[in-house]
Image 1 (cartoon, rainbow, N blue to C red):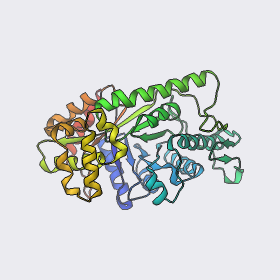
Image 2 (cartoon, rainbow, N blue to C red):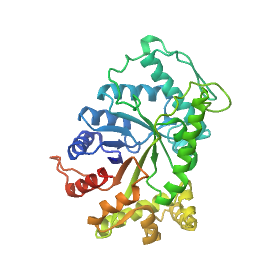
Image 3 (cartoon, helix red, strand yellow):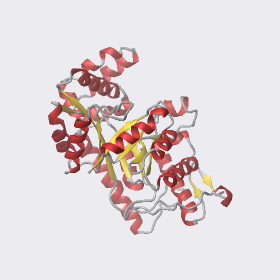
Image 4 (tube, helix red, strand yellow):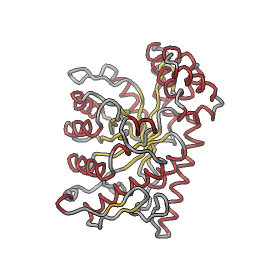
Length: 367
């Protein structure tokens, strides 16, 4: 099992230092979020400062950019790093797409399938000389002169790995199903429970993968939406990589425990994540949190995350017991684990809680 640094959005001046510290302690990858800063800029800085660790976007907002812009950014970062870059995409919610990025909103899952087909079509043109042609509900692409085509990637991926792994993130079964059908990985949202992952997300992943396998066996091509022909999505190989972040809540650290409660309360207040609560008959908690959020009463929200709800979403317990407890939760349900624990190296690159990270990495790698 691989152990990664959870998605963050550090200051650009800190990205290289964090990447070097993550590589030094033995993490397999670091993920960069599109929140305060531009994730492709951060990824460039992180990759340029390291030689082994993988770097991925966790996530970049797909609909804030054209698919060819995304394809070129990923292609260049893969070339820069000798294949250490992973492209992770998310849909975001309608308000952000329309009112923060100024882009149109349509049903996200079908449109994301179109974007992925177009990204892979561009890569196939640049790498293998396949004619560039994508026609779907929202896209009609056919122009790729050689003057605008980057040179082929000089590296070959490890056996069984795509040249540029492409993962998508999601909360519900719809995007999990899409990931199983067209992606190399699925980034589970931090606001999930062990039961939600096992009973809702994993079956959707498997169903999407099985459908893509049947389609590939028939020689068909993926249809993004509306019945328009589109660039074929490669048939699935190994099952989709499950990329699973998990909150860690040390019960012997009161300050950190409250920080985790506050993060869980924030996510639980959003209707998008209500399905997780409904599975555990806690939908009423989400409704109360939502009302507090609308009223701006943020300081009152963490109190609604009781110990039972905390233990459902996070791995809670004494700090020394957390590595084994996390391993028990994710065994058989994750391929990459992202422990949500402070990672704050000092100016010299020293990590104050290095012992805790060492124990986590060693315990999870043993699975």
